[in-house]
Image 1: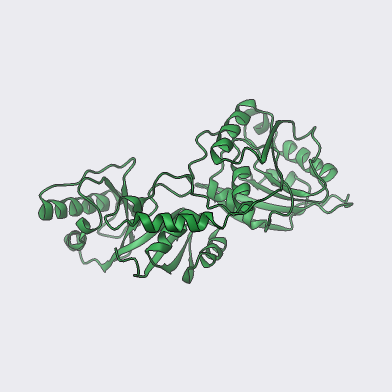
Image 2: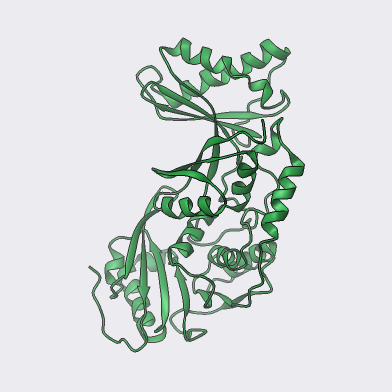
Length: 386
């Protein structure tokens, strides 16, 4: 692919993070940015594709358009896909898979649309090269996306490969696992700029802590990944990629702030310690076995990130658990900003605090509410959540 050619890229994200993603794309040099549903479109060249795959905190996938057409019937759908010069984009030895989103009257099931697309790609290689590539649905080197809306068909190469939330540092999980992209988005929603300490009192596998450290040090979040979808393209420019990677790393900065992770679960703390070590932030993130209800705040002010755990004991009386947490915040965390995410829409009414801001988000397919509480110093009055 030509390095100086511009593309109208589609960057996927989670619901509720479109605005933050738009700002990220602008900061990285994107042009003509348009917010979509769970996505943002942007114009950029091949170098920009490399840069945003490395540097985006709230992007899930970066899709590069290959073709768009109005289908007339199933045969026409096949013919249009057959006409795409797939052999110019990846080698016959490279594995691929097709993911289809949407349907219409003729392609009324995604598996049927995907099968016809797979047939067209395989037949194209067989006709041109006398060989066929292999389909790998679990771990394809080149993922291909097809979006169907009524009769409009859009075909994309997935430049990212694995979803960008798979940073590469979190190989171990604990209770209430949080998507890395969502964790970064929550921190960015808080407008935290690194000026005060961060505490995750129920840190699980440490995702909040690592994402906060990445932001504070201005480190590209996907620096730990081994490869991306574009790594397997014929037009992949390794020298350009390394140049862009070095440029992003050159923007990293020293940060002397503190990050505190606490949990009662020793298994979770072990997982967090291993993940943090892989992230290379083990010298700045401090872990400690501690009970939130019995511990003191580590400083006079800071950012408190709360993703409450879910287990049988807590589920038996979630309302009381949330009420007790709210009481601790009022007594011990005056001066702190609290970002609290939960999927329990009823239990949040028991916190006993009025949020200054709130957002609707999704953790995977799970609908969540993100609440921000500004714990003003000296304020004792208990507010009821509306």
